Image 1 (tube, one colour):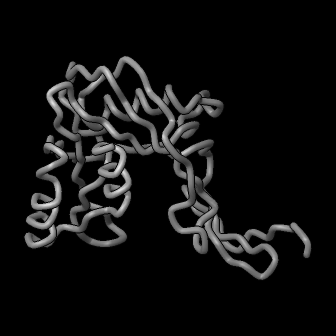
Image 2: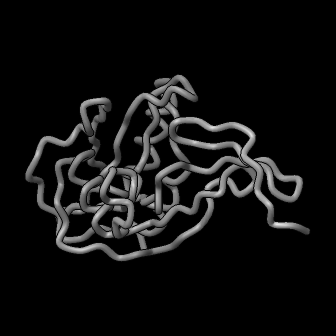
Length: 173
């Protein structure tokens, strides 16, 4: 086997590549993908909701984002990106972050590795809602009520990102 990688198509945010007979996508200008498990001091788990064009629906997700995607910050640390993304999306700041687990979300399609982090010592200091190109709604749901709430969201036509289940697993441990 050779490790020679061929670019098949280049996009603004992703490239499609081929290596050893496999075709897959890679993100451009990103050093890490962070998914944030955030539970408030009074025990409410923070979810975000936003419209996602590829699935043409609102999606219930955990707060998340990219590290190294801003010019001049290509070497952004995971904790810095998690701090920035949590505040942008939810309006919460955290005292600390702990890496929980890393892994691929779709190993046959994408080269990306997700890093799940737990945010602790939360304090709401901003409105959230994302950057100007985003329209994020923040939901705060107790983990013991999340299953029923998520079922209601699906029944209303929304989609639940399966990464939410990883977050729930760690939230109730």
